Each structure stands twice: as C-alpha cells, then as structure tokens.
Length: 505
Image 1 (cartoon, rainbow, N blue to C red):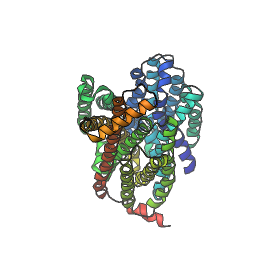
Image 2 (image 1 turned 90 degrees about the vertical axis):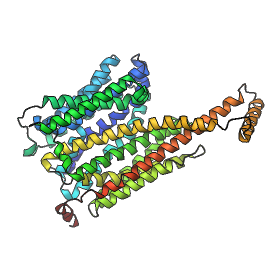
Image 3 (image 1 turned 45 degrees about the horizontal axis):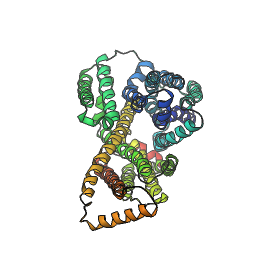
Image 4 (image 1 turned 120 degrees about the horizontal axis):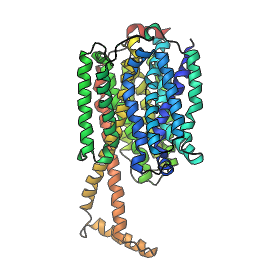
C-alpha cells in the first residue's frame, strides 16, 4: 500500500481530534449562554472529554489486539464522528457532557494508532519523516484549534465546531476501509479480559485528569474534593501497577519500561509538553491581561510559532536520518529553553514583534526536539508492540501538557501574591518614588477632570507590575525545567545500526 495515502488517511481524523481537544475552550461562553449554565458547569464539557480521552489512550494497544487494529480504528473514527454530530445537537449541558465523554472515548485511540501505523508503513530509514508528518498534526492542532473555534463561533454558531467534524469523519471512514490493511500480528485475537486492571486504570487516570483540570480553580489541596480525588488516583494507579505485574493477560505490558531508552524518552516527552503547553497558556494571558491585546491579536502572536514548527519538523526529519539523533535532540531542548528564557525578560513596554520571536524560537525548538525524541524512544520497540508503546508515549505527552498547565497557573498566582506583598512595602509616604508617582497621578486626574483616587491608579499599576514579575518567574522556571532534563538524553541508546545504515543510500 502507498505510504503517503496511508499517512493522509490516518492523519486526517487525528488532526480533527487534536483540534477538538482545544477548540471548545474559546466557545465556552457561547455554550454557557446557549444552554443556560454557569461558567464552572460549562467547563465540564472540557473536563469530560479530557478524562475519557486519558482513560482510552493507554489501553489502545490492548483494544487493538482485542478487536483487530483496523476494526478498532474504524470504530473509533465512527464513534468520534457520530458523537460530534450529537454534541452539535445537544439540548442541555448534561447531554453535551455525555456526548463529549463518548467523543473522548472515540478520539483517544486516534493518536497512538496513527503513530504506530506510520512507523509501520514507513521504512526505518524514513521514520524521521514519518514522525515529521505526525508532529505537524500534534503541534498544529493546539494552535489552529482556538483560532478556528473562535472564528466559527463568532461567524456561525458554537454547534458548528462539532458539525464540521462530520463530513471529515465520513471521508476518513471511507479512506480507512479502502486503504488501511492489518498486518498478521495486528489481527483480532481471542483473549481474557483483565477487568480489575481496566477498573483500576480507569479510576486512577480519570481521577488524575480531574485533579489536574479542576485543581487550580478549587484551590488544590485546600479543597476536600481535590484531596479525595488525589487519593483515589494514587490508590487506583498503584493497584493497577500491582495487578498488571501479576496478571497473565495484562492490559498494558509494563515491561516496555524495562527498555531504558523508552523510559527516558517518555520522561523527556512529558517535560517537553510540560514546557510547550505551559508557555502556550501563559503567553496569551500575559498579552491580554497586561498588554491589552485582543484574543485575535494574541492568536496572531502564537501563529508564527506554529508555522516555524511546521518548517522545522521536515528539516529535523531529514537531519535525523543523517546524523546522531541525540545531538539534534540536545539542540532542540536548548532552543526550547532559550525561548522561555526570552519570555522571562518581557516587560510592559515590549512591542508586538518582541512577543512573536520567542514563540518562533519555541516552534523551532519543538520541531527539532519532537522528531529525534520520538525516533529514539521507539527505535528499539518491536513492531508487534508498537501500538502499546505509542499509546503510553501519547499518554505521557498529554499528561505532561496537563501538568504543565496546572503548574504554571498555580505558580503564577502564588508569585503574583509574593511580588505584590514585596512591592507594597515601598508604598509609604516616606518613599520618594511613591511621592513622585502619587503627585503625577494626582496632577493627571485633575488635569483630565477625572474623579479617580490617585492611590487607586498607583495600586492598579502595582498589580500590573506584580503580575509581570510573576510571569517572568514562571517563564524562567520553565526554562530551568527544560535544561534539567538534558542529562537524560545521555542515558538513551542510539537507533539500531541497521536502521541508520540504510539511510546513506
């Protein structure tokens, strides 16, 4: 079968699934108003999808063996497409949440399945290029999702962010039926179901995703609900590991992590997306809350970074086939760290392009990071276990992004409070800069005829300065986190000799 046709077939549904992960965020206000729900209630439309998605991803390999990979891929696309139609037709918030759970179940398998199929149909000498194709979808989706969702919602209706998936899903089903073939080792096989393992995994991962999604809003461990779900998550995952270690028919073969390169690669991917999603969340908030940017302008700042990634990915794919992937990976990590360091130098007088360039640098860094990291991580995994390996790899990537978002929002709030307390110490009548600022504020308000207390203007500016410093601290922490994972690259093995020698032809 033609490898390029296969690539188009598997990436088409994967791309719309990745877009759907973030597209609802910008439409929440419209959904809330249309379905007469509060903002906290409306966020369940996001949480429901993320929880069901997180549960399905790690068991994709097991479900592929149980039903046959092609059958499971068709079922996933069909479920995702049908649930998208139902989401668009939702008559209440409760119905939307139920349909989003089904959508997450259908969409969860698409990323690991498409990645494993690409690694299978492309020869080892072209795995870098195969992962470049996959990476374009992975990186492009979170950027285009909010922009596309905002445009569709403003010009049509929030329901169309779901309806638009239907024709694409139908085309994907037809292409899959015609083009995708199962190798002998991915045919359907009869096996016993490890029900306890399935229950422990679902409870553990579902609770973890709930904690990460709701923790900041609920006040983390000051909330009894978050504490309870954290304990449930920890107990569920520990029991799952014990169950899988002694099960004759495990859902996930944890012995994959005996491969040192695979283990190090998963840790590196966790922190790579920790950095990526953390910075992607912080940058628009910085621009909109402190710099006065509109949502559209903030989106324009993110856009060039996505273009840079799509340019860097194929270049990295070709370089991986010629040079040691570990060297390229180190360069990618350093460039990604440099980007967040550049963001940590932001101030309240920066212009548009000063905000764009660090995002472009991050796009280049992630392009040069994703390809060699994926190639190295999966290079020693047998083909018959590739779907399970890619499932775990995608799970760690998604959890890394969720933890990154939770981390930066928490650190940002705490550092803002810290800097506010420190700056307030200087707002005393004996402080000369304060006297000058108050005199200037008083003159301006009187000159313009404004009935505003000068101290209120000074306090508002203090809050802006405190938040700016908090953003700087958080970006700097992301930079340090990226640099700290550099030694893990040295623990990874190079790709197999037979995979690198073919490349010289």
